[in-house]
Amino acid sequence: MKVSLSLKVASKTGESRITYISDEAAGYLKKYLGDRIDDVDAWVFPSETDATRHMSEDRAWRTVIDNVEKAGLGKSKEATVHRRRKIHPHSFRKFFFSKTVGVIGETASHAMMGHGTYLKTNYRRTEAERAKDYLKCMPYLTVFGESPDMNRWKEETKLEAVRAFAQALGVDPLRLRIEKAKESGKDLSIGEEIEAIQNEI
Image (cartoon, rainbow, N blue to C red; front, side, top):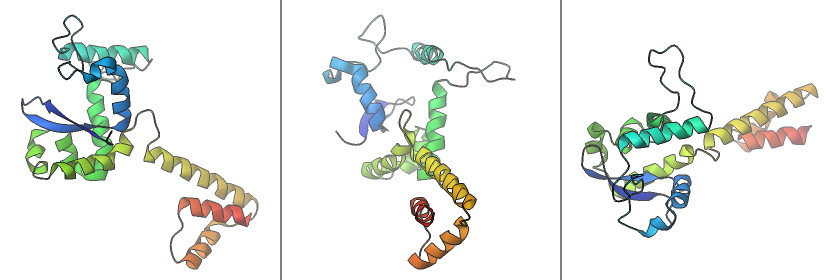
């Protein structure tokens, strides 16, 4: 299976376009579909009363909210008139945009979300180019795994701890980093700086 799945879907404008899902989402989707995965005529989200029809938008919204409640995440925003929930279906679109805009830019992010104003511009590019954009974003779209942001935070936290320990032992991390950078002719990565400090102490 490819890293990203491309599915032709009918958008809210009634026009067909291509979208993508992550490896993580594809894995959960396969489990959810079960034997239906080979039925090309089956709805991904069928109606609870008639499998030949798709789930209504209202029912889909309610299903998300119900599961958010079951997970204990059904808190509402405070000091708002309608007490809007912190997590709701539209939150997923906000999550997608916030994670992709810094990777592929505003125009491409809006286009992937199906915003018509941006589709005409982005869809001048080939499907392969759009798929490549999504692959750049996919590591940042994980929900249950670790994103590059989280890995970076862990590395930086470890570096700060190692620096503090070195200073307690009388080692100057800043001086060491400058010296090692001069020796190698380049700035040290977080991993290289941690290794240099550990070797020094």
